[in-house]
Length: 125
Image (cartoon, rainbow, N blue to C red):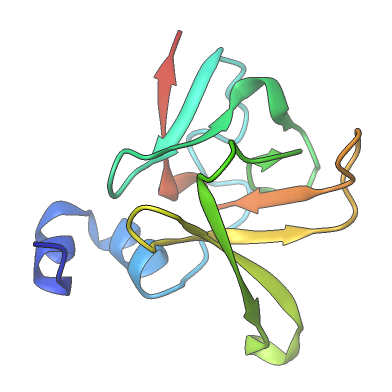
């Protein structure tokens, strides 16, 4: 039962706005932005494991950033909303909006997964 009524009941209003309505949290406000904890970041909606803390870095953009997602954890979609052309990142398990990925990241992948903190939960090691 993953209809919108289910998500409205399960998620906070802010989580619902971002995860299910493709919103964005204000920069520099997320609880996990400065997290240095070791472990995995999971989808706040369904619990799918998305990112390892080993790939997290400080991009200075105001949202948690990652060099790569775990294999098969996310899906990509063309997004031309708000007058920009971007690549949206969604959870591969429940389809919830997480953020966007850009080609300006450090490291081997050259990617910067810019993810809303409200979309994530931390599963500490």
